[in-house]
Length: 206
Image (cartoon, rainbow, N blue to C red; front, side, top):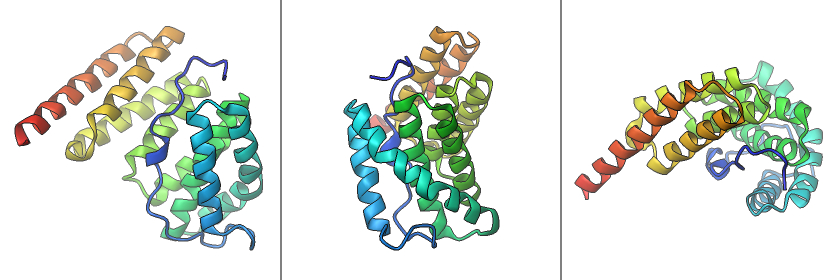
């Protein structure tokens, strides 16, 4: 298993938008359906801790398709490209996490950034970007990203699942154990408090 104590990303499956096509970033024999199937297989292996298999699935796809998608994002605001970018960002996160490859993790962050320029309200992608920064040991960048995610969660709190906030709190607390600024525990506590409020609201609505 990966040597890092940063938890595997449990929110990975929620980052993508509904599939809309590929906006010309895939080779002819790599259809959107084929890429989606490869993404699902790599995600399943990753969350099952079959890290070597997940890495073998993800890395070739990232190396072949992500550079073209990032190039396309510089001159296109095509909504169809957003889904390809976040799919490839997730794959780069998997490949980088499994192989402890800092360059792949940086590519993953670049792809999340490009995706979020096209789809700024995707809080799941924001969460994965923050976790990728944390896994890259960019603790300052990670907590800025988690703070932005927290603010976005407050703005759309009715759409945020309490378990996601609890997961983010656990990631922050784990980072403090790794040596991050202990003041981050206050942010984690705020996420836990918000999760409790949302859970109470759900019970009242029921």
